[in-house]
Image (cartoon, rainbow, N blue to C red; front, side, top):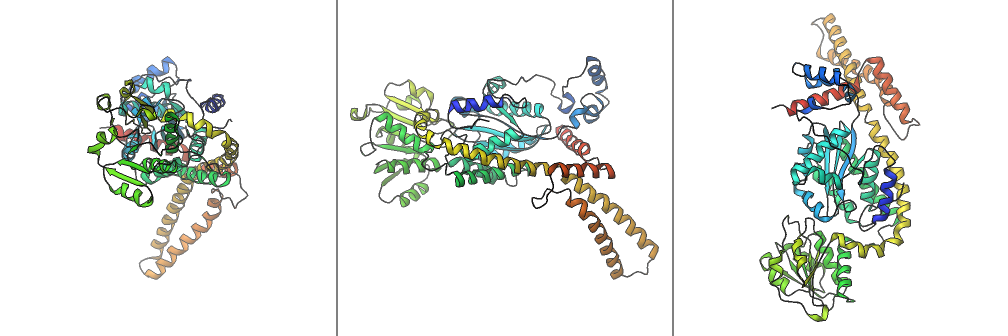
Length: 532
């Protein structure tokens, strides 16, 4: 498969390779979403004959949604295994004006997870929303229904129509979804190939998701493994060496447009002192700036930056003085989390012109998503506005020397994919282990009760405790062998197929009925949630 890099051409090659896989859809391939009923699981639409469908609808009033699924041609659904799916948009597939509408602030990630997991076919969820991507990762009971529900949820929360989302959306399943996240965390799918900030953002997904219902074992394990992969790629390939970040690319872009060799004579203004804003300030200093005005809601962060960069004059200004500061600036960098534009046309057209010595045009470099500078500002002849999508001009010159390292990174990702798949597949044996223990415990408790009743009331507490310990010891020793053969341990010379064969054998021998019964329990829970 082609390497996913920060360029549109390499990503096109990546997509063309994926389109050979029937389980993957990427624009311009479009997934059709058929409108149907909305009555929860009772509205599941399957490929059944007209007679069967008519009979099923007649029985719907007297048969529960779960029983309808089990007795119709949709019975195959109860046997479908959960899938890891990513549904999203990124800078490869959608322009910033679309991405900003779908962006989810970090503070809202927990609520988004809860809402997604309330959907009928979604078990677990996570949100990764940055300036270059908005991706939703889910564990779904059904691939088609899961994608449909998540897409409709995205439309409902953003106000963007389902059809428009589908034009820019990409969907990846299971191993392809896992590979994608590993490439994202490694910086291979970034606008800036090898950049390190995305790894911190993936870490933040895990930190934010801790304790949130729905950020459970599979999704949590996926993101934690992605962090491990990202760290390993950067350590073993040194792909980040000499790489630019979004912030440094923004600083470079402004220099290109100003036709200046440094910021020594340029008056920069930075709006926002968060992580991105701090990086902008550092890169401005590296490019010769000695005086920087920073507008922020509070002075605390600006003071910390000033303390770190002692040889530079960093002037704090409150948000209330933003327009006055802009009037005195040649270049304005914006990097805030504001959901509404900070600059509109009427704000900017009243500003005085900048010096002809630096081109006579005021530059706005907006690296925020949603954008801090309204699109209407671009209509003015006295300004030039650039956003994150315009950084490709700078990034292209920095990319070529790291493509070889990206190829090396793909080898690491391939190894880690196998390890994650083994871990995920081994989770299938957990229900069998639990059911086997429960089965043995029922027998142990029953037989112990029979023994105690035969021994009468004269038995002491010490004797009862000894008998209890004896029964537990016998059960644990008998279960030790079977349970060990149900666990995937790298120290054992046992393949995953052998482990799964052992699981199916125990399911048959003890009639544990793990797969179907567990899915039925999940479906019952979802049906119960959907009922008023």
